Length: 247
Image 1 (cartoon, rainbow, N blue to C red):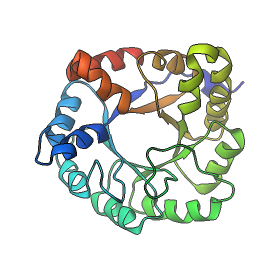
Image 2: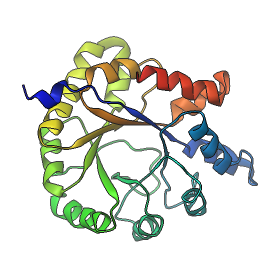
Image 3: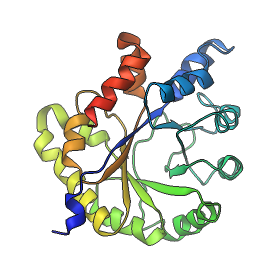
Image 4: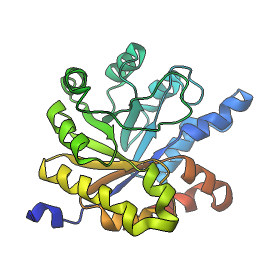
């Protein structure tokens, strides 16, 4: 086994603040203050902020993205479907630390699958070259499938983000079995020189086991569970609880 697969990496926590914006938008106005919340989350120890502006702007708005960029001190990760020209224009204007390409469809409730990196190789290669020409790190949302990981390598992406919904769904009953494809996908990504991120339905129950079993995990993006937990534990304490799971 290559030595690189044995390396213990520090895993960064990037907090997705979409749900804070959802709460704000439910009443209009600016309560809760999304920008202040993002700054507080950084102050509480998170190493990144993630947003996923959708075409209907039902949570994070394009204005939010523009307002956040000059104020954030940690990594800024923007997720979205690059087939939306308006979205691509926003990313090129804002120039975040990282763009995560997600194959969402119009009106989709939440992300529910990764890219078919084989069928979409040429398209992904072209759009990734656009972002990389502006020195924006790129990550592709993929299922835990070695073929899709190998296809991602062919696109020129810097990283992949493993879509962890299946892991989270089966964790309570089949954690030893369900972790296997994620571990193998991560190992293959490391062999190919791809950075490894992960996200979707990770929470305080399943995060530590995932971290312990995925080699070279650079970043997790967590939103819904973390913001929900903050209703009970408080935002600062919740960020700290998640950070502890990644040690």
